View 1 (cartoon, helix red, strand yellow):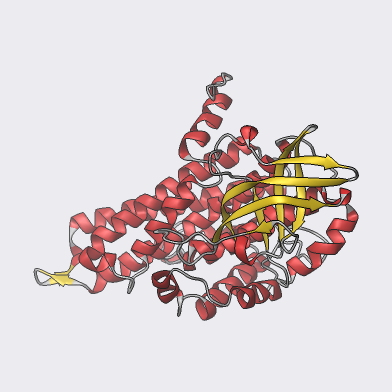
View 2 (cartoon, one colour):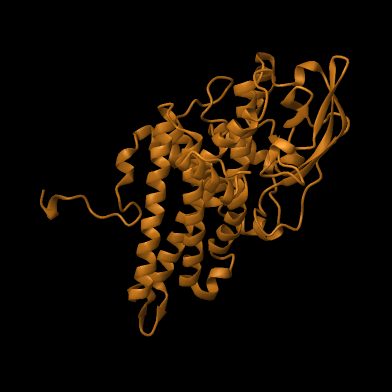
Length: 395
């Protein structure tokens, strides 16, 4: 094939990754991208600066109407989309803002997934259709004030009282907490760690919102306080005991982060590329200088390598072959590279890079949270280290 018959080079897709996508994949991606462009991008700088996410209930219902909530789950009003399609949706949502992707990820990959995977049929029927429609927002209570990376030593405890359960404890850094209608809370019991489906109007349950954040500002983050919360026997998730339950939910959610981080990186890269082609210094656009082109080339390489990695992991998940260690591989690489792309993009924008007129600094600060939630860098390094050597270095 001669150069004249080759397809043109596309700066937005330099590797031709779109060739790997079906028409249905592209339709899902384009639907979510258009929703984000219409409903998030015109307002996100204002929301971020104010440190709030107004109209979150309306946003949730709209996300439900396009099938974005619990979209990779089947039945109960869920879309039954492929893992790749879910990943593409996460990328587009995080290209708008990490807080929006977090809303969707916690709803679908943590709260809904826990009920779908481990719940009773009654629990599924009660909660999943309304959550898929965005009528009920969910949250996921695992992390505690003193126990993040070491959930086995959580202090939240559930004890029997006749046929009921009594829950006491605190959870911290809980996305959606103060707007949720239902919380999936993990607690120690005399029979090991168990999950509980907790209606947030239960007496003794409260969720004060966490303020003064410098990251994920356009996101609802809360503490969960459980003070003698009494639940019936059927509130427990019956199909799992031990940490396998919450950890498998986290693995499902981390997969979405592998894609989502590349959305934040893409938005920052595109901002820097557009700026470099129009900003003039020393008589020409700064994109015409070798040092700037070097930065752009390096960012493009890491961005699209990350998308390829996410796509590969998505195909493995669709084939039922994705291992948790491979999810750690993806999160470790893609979030780390996304932060570096944001930082490099900021240098191209110069002083303008710190302004909310551009998305770069907002994405950079958001990714500082994404870097450590649902598994810190160190935890994912140790997961991979153990897989590579067969030796456990966690303790």
